[in-house]
Amino acid sequence: MPPTSAPPNPIKPSIAWMEHQAIQYRKAILEMIWQAQAGHIGGSLSCIDLLTVLYHHTMEITPGNFAQNERDHYIHSKGHAVEALYAVLQGLGFFSREALDTSQRKHSAFLGHPTRVVAGIEHNTGALGHGLPVAVGMALAAAIDRSPHRIFTLMGDGELAEGSIWEAAACAAHYQLDRLVAIVDCNGLQISGPTSQVLSMEPLAQKWAAFGFAVREINGHDIAALAALFDSLPFEPGKPNLVIAHTTKGKGVSFIEDRAEWHHHVPSEAEYHQAMREFAAAESEWEARYANI
Amino acid sequence: MPTSETSIMGKPNQDIFSDTLVSLAHENPNIIAVTSDSRGSGKLTSFAREFPRQLVEVGIAEQNLVGIAAGLAAMGKSVFAVSPACFLTARALEQIKNDVAYSNHPVILIGISAGVSYGALGATHHAIHDFAVLQAIHNIDILAPADNFETEQAVRTAVTRNRPLYMRIGKKSMPHLHPPGTPFNIGKAIQLTPVQEQYDVAIVATGETVAPAAMASRHLAAQGYSSCVLSLHSIRPFDEAEVMHAAHASRVVITVEEHSINGGLGSRTVAALMQGRIWKPVKMLAIPDQHIITGSQQDIFEEYGLNAEGITRHAVTLLEQGREKVQ
Ligand SMILES: [Mg+2]
Image (tube, chains in turn orange, green):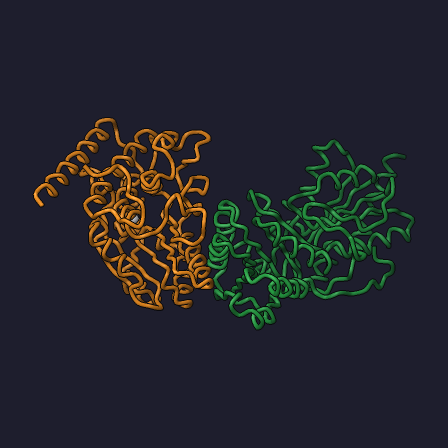
């Protein structure tokens, strides 16, 4: 069995370890939402593979270096998917597993959107379209200081309708912020339905490219491919980076996948157990896959 | 206190802001000014020339201006986000609320050409809502310096304060209101008039209405009325103690502000007095809740009684009403 926590930097965990860990995080997300009887399950499950790779492979952010500025930075712009962030930060040891039991309760630091009160979180998000401008400001500071560190932010695809994102996009290209890494969790859905029907932003890659970004598209659930892609940063010197991660909302639970109504639906007891069985099956499949190698 | 009708005229507070910023940047390479195509109106061209690496231009994009300022501050920069007050505190209000105040990043927001400085340009360019909206948002100081001295002190103090702060600054030349060596502390009102045990009228003013309030004090003295003029350069933190003390020692209270009658200095003062059980006749002078007349800042002040004549007239009326009731 893999270890229960990530090995310390600079030794990076294997792809196999991260794949297994992503399943553990899916269980933690479901458990949090089940305990709180609230939360955003669809968006959390669509971005959890991305967060697993970013926090365990790509970014240098640990409880040990968090207090200093000389490290990578991450802003969770799609703040509603906070359960995914809590799961990974807990996995990194920012706080205990028990701390999450208070999630969304009275006086809990673990509310339904990220806040800096929680260890490991750098910016309060929840209103959409705020992460990229702040990340651009952080990347500008890094550029002014000639720091080698990178600034990452994760946005939803529905979020891209916010005009503030495109103000920031123009600015990032103007200042050639190639330490900025913006990622779109492109699950094709938002609260009211398919993003293509609510407000189509296609052709999305061309839009970002026209704004001056180096754009890469990838399967946002392929942990090996994600790790390799982020290893190749910056994609083009002098250009800010934009990753369109094609994902499935609710990934990992058959009856939640690709359904807009599961944006923040809370599972029934039967659905909770069914989802847990599907995660257990994914774990068995993972063991079988690596037993054969 | 100004000693004559022709008190010595200073510069526009916006010039003092930019002079002070240049002076601070000479000592502190960590200072960054962020502008939204507003370096000219913000008088930041000399700063931009001297410290090109410490000036970030974001174009006409106020939401981005504030978001970027928060990101720079999060990375330890000492950030001034400079933009016309009308756009900064309306268009970028959600960024001020979430990225600065709620996220607790110590950005200094400078609202230039504040109040009705842009007078005849119309309501798009007026900022008479800023005290109201920002007072309803937790965790951001709100300053409105009255003269060159207060402006320089406010800017210097803001840097060391290291917390979210908004300051509105006007573009008209202001008279010097304070003798050298006057103590300045954020959250502490400054009394412009000599301290007495009792006054006829307390005039509580802020920003560019403090100068006409000081002038009104002299007009009132000529008519035999004593007054206590307070400069409330801090709307938040609000100096309740000093305001209550002045009101307690006076027969009537006048508040004066270049702001909507709703949610500004007047209502804040009245709330403090009522809850502090100080029952005095009050007149709130502010921009009324109606379509604002066309004209310069001076014209608008005159129309709504925010100039020295208007303040004097309203004070006398309030004092005479009180006398009638007593008789
Ligand atoms: Mg989506």
